[in-house]
Every structure is written in structure tokens, then in C-alpha cells.
Amino acid sequence: MIENSELNVPQDLEKCIKFHGHLCPGLTYGYLVAKEAIRLLDIRRSEDEEIVAMPENDSCAVDALQVLLGTTAGKGNLLLKDYGKNVYTILDRASGRGFRFSRKISCRNDQQDKVLKSKSLLSRPFEEIFSTEEISASMPPYARISPSEPCAKCGELTMADKLRQGQDGKSMCIPCSDS
Amino acid sequence: MIENSELNVPQDLEKCIKFHGHLCPGLTYGYLVAKEAIRLLDIRRSEDEEIVAMPENDSCAVDALQVLLGTTAGKGNLLLKDYGKNVYTILDRASGRGFRFSRKISCRNDQQDKVLKSKSLLSRPFEEIFSTEEISASMPPYARISPSEPCAKCGELTMADKLRQGQDGKSMCIPCSDS
Figure (tube, rainbow over the protein chains, first blue to last red):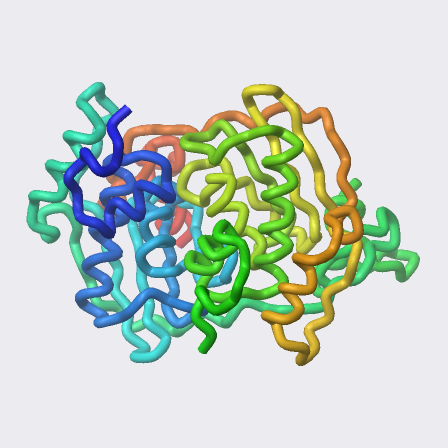
């Protein structure tokens, strides 16, 4: 196995590799998008929900967005749409600006070494790999916070606004309500 | 703002805080679950998809699972169910074992300082906070990989198995198909 320190890649990409577990073209696409969004929007990593990422796939790229932009699955500012599209929209709540990045080049799942393929992507101009469009998007709402209450059937603690009212007027969690 | 180094928390929790952006009870619940899963299953951080996490909510806790277990949104081994339930199932593909953790104590959204509340959780025995159940679960399939093809309408690259066949036989991405 190649150690990260032997990869000779930028330090911020090393952070992404450490989080993701390995270097691959998918992660590199996310890295390139995050860097370009930081440059265009002049933003810092999102401590809370200042930045919002809307990837239209659940590929490796998402992990680079999480690490570099702070748009994480547990913070409500990673709004993943499972369309399988190689598209990433990044919004900045402070300026109200947003950019949509759509990958232009195909990535074949051939046997070419993932590390070599990733490093070759790093050497190409961004505009060769992605098309970029500034968009006017309304900002999505902030993550909801609601207290937890026990489900009337299983007793397990559940966010109140995710409980469903049964015919008997009792509030049940989604799995109990569906069963 | 309190610097992480001033928080006087364990180093692995510091890593979670750095990724998540701040210390809060939600993150601490995820931290406690991840640590207990590591202890019970005798596992290391998942480089690829060796470990699978199935949180039944999208709260801050998810970020601690990502950091400590390597079950990340971009790797296909974070199978988030948006039920709002304070439940976390962690599976180990190698041993075929899994544990389900269900939070027993409520967390009021009052004004008590989040850092103090988090630190008080760290001082309590795990079994006071979560119930633990060993489960026999079948392992979920690995993440699918499929080549990208252009949508016949918008032309954007889309994972082939996410394309939908239109009445005219052309393959379209989900947004184009729905519009």
C-alpha cells in the first residue's frame, strides 16, 4: 500500500485521502470542485451551515466536499440528491451566490491505476474537466431541530416532527408505522 | 470562541470536532457510539467498506461516525435512514457481527451550554445513555459502480444505472425525466 506521504499530492488533498481512505479519481473530482468553489466564492470551510453543497450523486467526490468545504452529512448542509449525475452545486449563504459544476469528461472503470489517473487529473486545467455556471438559487432552509419523544409502539426516542399519528391518535416512529 | 485545545477532551473527539465544526451533545452521542462499536467489534477505521453504519437520523452524531469509523457519505458504507430515531446500527463485514445502539436519555434543546452538556455525557457510563443489542443482520450490498453516459436531453454525464428510459427509447437523467 502507498502511504499518503509518498503520493506527493497537495496537503489539502492528503486530508481528503485520510478521511476517505484512499486516492481515486472520484475523490479528485470532488477535490477540484471544492477548490474551485473556494476560489470563486472566496469562502472558508463551513463551521456551521454557512456553505451548502448539493451533489447530485453519492460518489467518492462527496467526501472531498465534506473535508474541504465543511458541508457534512451530520450538519444539514450536505443536501445529497441521488441522481447519479456528475453535478455539484455549491452555495454561500453569506453572499447569496452559488455555482454549479458539471463534469465534462468520462471516467472509465478500466484497470488504469487509480493513483496515476487521479494525479493526471490534477495536472489538467479545471475548465477542461468541469463546466462552471453561476446560478441564482434560493438558499435551502437550515436543518431542523426538534425534541425527541418516545414512539408509542417501540418506545424508542424519535424526533417529534418525524413521528406519525396513528388512527388511535398515538404517535409512532416511521418503522413501527410501516410495520 | 473556545479553541479545541482548550476543551480538554480526548484526542479522537478533537478530530470529530475539527471535522464537524463544533462540540455539541449530538456529536458526543455519535462519538460514544463509535467508541463502543470499536470496542465491541474489535475493529479499526474502515479504509473502504469493511464497516457499515446505519444511523436512523441525520443529526450531528453522524459526523463522529464518519470520522472514527470511516463510514462516510462518499464511500457507500453510511446507509442513512431519515427516521429521526436516535438509533445507530454498526456492522462489521469481516466477522458478520453487528450491534444496534438506541439512546435512552432525552436531550432537551434548552440553553444549557452545549460544551458543558457534552462533557457531562463523557463522564457517564455508556449503558446509562444507550441500550445495546447484538443483532444478526445480513450485510448490505457494496456500493455500485457504473460508467457515466450523457442524458439524451440535457447531455450531462449520469451513472448509467440511474438513467431512465423514455417512451421514445432515449435514456434521460432523473431531473429531465421528471420535468
